[in-house]
Length: 67
Image (tube, rainbow, N blue to C red):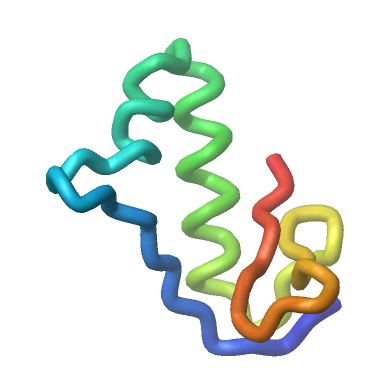
């Protein structure tokens, strides 16, 4: 398990479009609920299981969310 204080920030394009909003809108209800559940889990738990959250190799602050 990883111990971090996590604040999730979504990428926003120069034209103010938010690709994650577009992605979530494209999912069915069950899929969207799972994605938001995992994101909430990562933000709220002091220790996030590695199956949901992993630091990308050779990066400073980029993490992969695993759904």
